[in-house]
Amino acid sequence: MVYGDLQFFDLIIFAAIAVFIIYRLRSVLGKRTGFQKNTKQQEQEFIKKENKPHQDKIPQLTESEKKFEIVYKKASSFDHKAFLEGAKKAFEIIITAFNKGDKKTLKNLVSKDVYSAFEKAIDSGSNNSNSQFYSLVVDGIEDAKVEGGKITIAVNFISEQILGDNEENIVKNKDTWIFEKPENSKEPSWTLVST
Image (cartoon, rainbow, N blue to C red):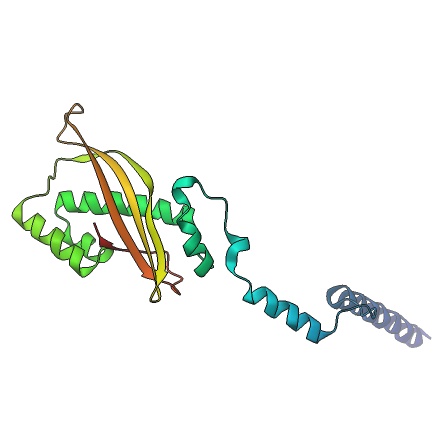
């Protein structure tokens, strides 16, 4: 009798496990009610969404950022806020490396032409190793375009640098730098191609 009770108990445990598995599968997979759209209609809607321009993904832009619309329409992964933050950091890193004569850092961030110009200026002693940043502001976007598989953005910067240790000796500069990267690149890094 004891052995027969164990079989009955095993049967109840297996039944409970089967009910639990069916319940979990149904909650994960759902159940077909007959009101689903047919797959051809779903495919057509997906294709329509894919062919729509990226205008619905364009965030609200300030007046000085309106030129970014061109990039947003052609490059779906573009983020102007991340670009502007990166451009400011790049500006500071590049100017600091230039002032200190750090050619190795410059070589990784700028194009060959820009590197040649910086290298000549460093070699001629045009850089000032005593200057340091005081402030940096993005003054606007001069131009933004997507052509030939490349995204090119020209950014206007206004920077102030302290010369030496004297805070009264501040030099204010307005620069337009052009950054570029391949359109299909997922990398966040841009290359400075013109100053």
